[in-house]
Length: 357
Ligand code: SF4
Ligand code: SF4
Image 1: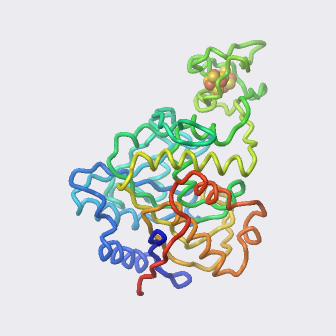
Image 2 (image 1 turned 90 degrees about the vertical axis):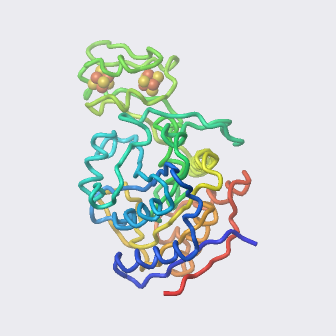
């Protein structure tokens, strides 16, 4: 018997209020939040979107979930982690301000935002895993202090992972900066000399004393550098560059190992939701583009992140009658599901339970 994946089918362009009310009914009817116990500090992890036009889960869904968690006696808060690349979401201060501007303020969601990886994305915990690439992964520190996790992810295409949904939100979205770097990068940072002002901030923060100033620019000693990314986070002049090159297979496997690390902290204490509306070719980090590739499908929920992503992918391909590679990026994208199976993480087999409208 496969893992249960509950589905609410949506009409194309169904309004969020209606969909959210149906989701609430399903969650209550199936007692899906009963994994939250009295006083459980509950991280509600989502993605605030890069621009208002994208398809991220709107604040009203988070508000409904926050209320449901409080009804269980839980203590919920909204959480996210800093991005590696510079921008609106590359540190706690900007990220929280950005979330507010996207409508995720306390008045709208009833939950405060607390960044899981601290002010600069470097607060982390090391989680041991039975992986094939790693024996431990670097996860944002706050998750280790929480009792339960509720994750809301938006299904999209993705230029490196093929698609992004719960596994990607877990693996990449819950990793500390070091964990993100481990997934993305196979190389050490380099300094862009013409952008470097020789301010010396990176030298102060480099844990390995790998940086010096020579001829009015920072220079990294590759032998000393451990690839922690501290310099990338602290440079205000965008003078530190990483090579993000990793193969699709390598990236997806590393994402899955990090996702497994996060889930190991919440056994029996987590719920995952994929929103399959406004599905775009690119992920919600790509603020400059929005190209909807398929009419809205609905919302899927499961206690198993692997079953949930497998069911979501099957529904996207089933509805469109095409492989995802013909709608988004022509790259392999099933590595993430197959690799989870190889690791005995989650269950690709699922039982779809469609809620009545
Ligand atoms: S923090 Fe940036 S600008 Fe300052 S010395 Fe380092 S690389 Fe150069
Ligand atoms: S990546 Fe870390 S160790 Fe390497 S130069 Fe930057 S701060 Fe130093």
